[in-house]
Image (cartoon, rainbow, N blue to C red; front, side):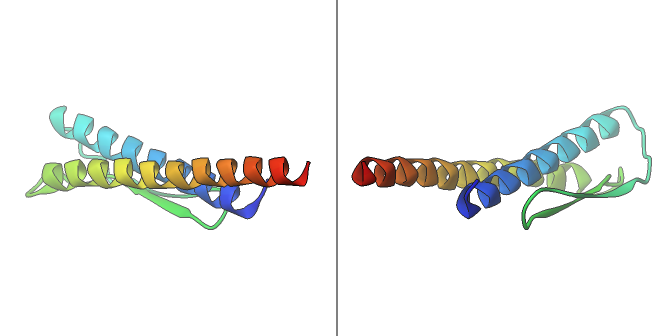
Length: 97
């Protein structure tokens, strides 16, 4: 697997973890369940995700919604890099043949 593909897949995995974490935080807030959890999960490649559950106070819900939007945009950007890398590889193979 080439480097661009590996990095973009790693970024997509990190974005997915970020989205799942913020969604979990929103659900736990709606159920009034405040469990202080901090887990660090290494993803493949150069991306390291950190999963922490937000508290029920203040702007936590707003921050989780912002995290979801940021995760979505990060995933889409990495997906674009993945697709472009795949297209470039296909073009290179066509030229070589």
